[in-house]
Image (cartoon, rainbow over all chains, first blue to last red; front, side, top):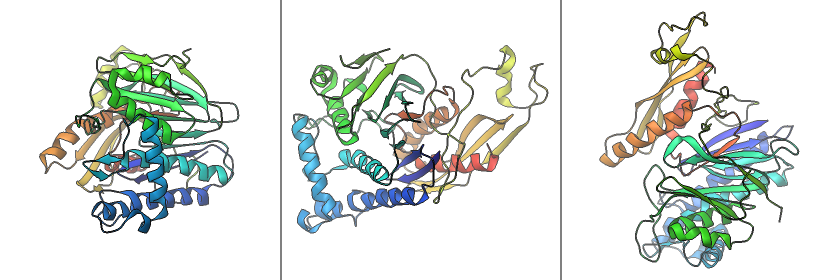
Length: 244
Length: 158
């Protein structure tokens, strides 16, 4: 087992590789990748491509090619969520809501290409896991209770899974409803589980914005299941989310 | 597309395992990951254990000696200022986590930290459930806290 913790993008990334062997070089590549993503996409860095685009100093065509890739993913996810996920905030392009999950999913793919069959990457609570903790042994992911961080509200286990949670984080509600401009209310957190983290993360954000109506909406999303925690602490699961 | 196999296991009050302090195999860059992991039941200690938290002489008759030490992590610089974490270890087990220094200059920082740091401390302490590999949640953005905690844990040799 090889683990590495990397502070980046204002949070902490944990890379957990369960394959035998020597993974230092692959981990170094992942770390470089994460910092590259931060350098291109951080809205807190004045010299990032995104900041320069937002100041209209450069266009998307002049920016790092990753920007147009991310823009395409943002538009895909905006369509897939009926506009409840958006990369536009206060009139400016802001893909922050997609970038972390996308970066983790890509980092996981990089490890896969380097031969890893059993690993998980956790980017500030958003997880892409490949294989299991060992052949045939599922990853067990605790979902943090939004009302009491000492507890978990549920445990999801699986092979090859992504888990993303959106909610009122420690910095308060930072997700706004693109239709009303108001902070999202109605739910304490939404966790979405499925094969790929970029989509899981965007679905979680969109569902959090939708509020209590999200359970029915998520039921219709193929391949993804969810656990919604209400502001009263009640937990609801989508129909396909098997409970044991 | 790979198939997702998932099962949601019961809810209830299993405790969170966020950081793990044991590094298995080091990696090239930086800190070995954290990984708190203690026994399944947070007890193992009988009723008289409530006195233990303040270290010193534990009263439990079963236990021979309580060795307790306090270690302060290296201050981690963040955009908002330095964060420094102090831990108390009793009998090889983390019993207390405190942020001894954190940014409070800006009222908003103070507000954030007043909430976030106790939450993170509890998470770090709540080592309980050994049955969880990872935690998903809209949680930890406080990497200054985590990196100082990690250095304290490294020094303590847990």
